[in-house]
Length: 171
Image (cartoon, rainbow, N blue to C red; front, side, top):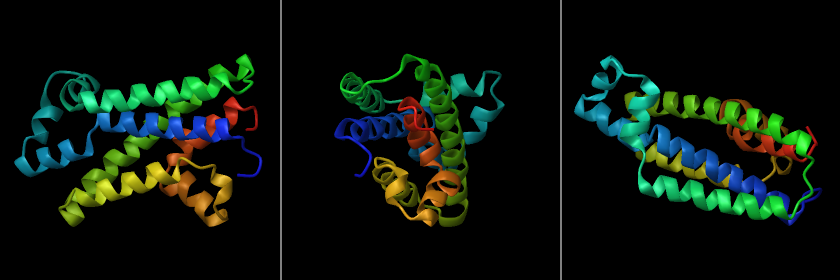
């Protein structure tokens, strides 16, 4: 990919895996749809606990944690082979956290819409798989419309590409 080294693409791919792993850990689209079908999702919204604490205690699985850990190992390996200016690390962390939060909220909204419209969790599985694959590459390989779609409508670029650009000092 023009302008990107192997290790930069590897770092971007690991960022995408971390973002998707966090989403599966925090909100677990399948668990939300199952709870919607069972009629038990309301109990999570009415408990006197923080929503974040309820979701973190109910949805994460060991598989999600191993996905995040393996992506962190890849991230460390890729970062060790790239010269990174330390002044870009803090803005990168802020952008990555904001991007993951935005992407998590988007997926949460999409899960509920998919359930209401399609009554199926297969759509979410397909969409998250496509986003995971698409987000593993720099947005510059897509035409302008594709860049717009992956930045605004399906915001995987906000969670992985733009933080990577900041880390490389290219944003």
